[in-house]
Image 1 (cartoon, rainbow, N blue to C red):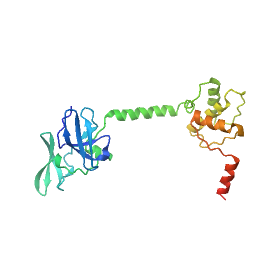
Image 2 (cartoon, helix red, strand yellow):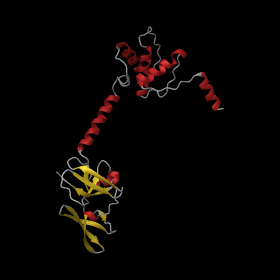
Image 3 (cartoon, rainbow, N blue to C red):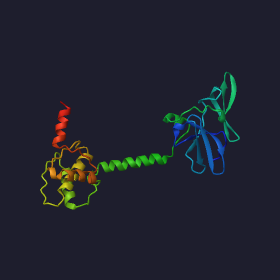
Image 4 (cartoon, rainbow, N blue to C red):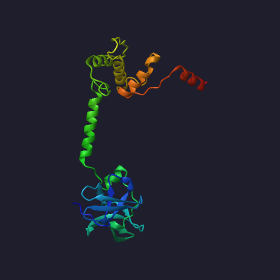
Length: 241
């Protein structure tokens, strides 16, 4: 278990915008930090805390609460606290980490790197694997066909896939009543939108089917449309004249 001492400086990996925090209380199970920059305190479980120790290296410039600025020459440790040694106006000066200026942010990548706030390789591996899976999905021939909330009916998927494979599809769906022409059209439209082959769609249906199509496209394909009846079209024309 990490040894926590009052006065040590740490950074919260989950809230880097809080800046540099100073340990103000330690007990058997928790550790409490005060983040002066944000004016807030945080209490963490000692065994599972998202904290990274702040440690400056030789060559870094640091400042104290008394506005003493030095360039670090070497770093030692005393009673669990880091001590930075450097030159201040020609005099070798030692600064304990508890006296460091708390108004320091480490949200930029280079700041995190130079203060040794390094994430584990598992985050890189997770992102790498995610991008690989995303790339495979983008190249899948079934892309755009497996998202909708519909049953996998063979003849519907076959028609949607056949249309999707065409460069500039123009088809007439002439199945009998009840065989799912609305679903087939929705699958084709969803696939075209997901693959970027279409950006906008105009659907023309008889007035009696307007509400049915509107609801089906939202419920099954998560596609939201605007109903343009004659009255609304007249209002749009009037607003633009």
